[in-house]
Length: 198
Image (cartoon, rainbow, N blue to C red):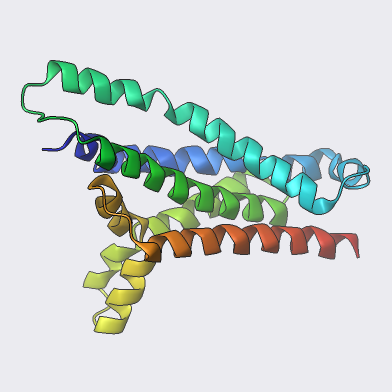
């Protein structure tokens, strides 16, 4: 068993990641709307894009800080478990890169959802439902049969990408998908705030 499989192959770990992202992004704009501070924030001498990017990178940076202690987990397990073989540094690095990519796109989605509502609870529920559906959508292959549906669900599913990332495989398809998702949801958030100002 590879050491990356212990962390990145664990369903419980990814469930916690999805919950943390939903809770982390639920207040980014919803709280501003509810408290009435969004107007003063958007009338400050900064652009809407700057506000959105600042909130996005703050949430992403906080998420990275939260994940940093997991490196200690890998070191401790390696030191005290005789079953674990030698550490494959490449697979650990690509596993963390995959975690970063997936989280970055899901945080962008959570930011977009938060910009749509003034309720933090609704924002958290919709965000969690959306990212959980996207992450585990490869499980719907058993319901929807067909080569096209299997290909689409496998392309979208974060869970199917995790295996490749945690085994040192870097493919351009998930890279393009997650970067496109980040750009799309950040752009959609900008447009949502612009429509609100009309």
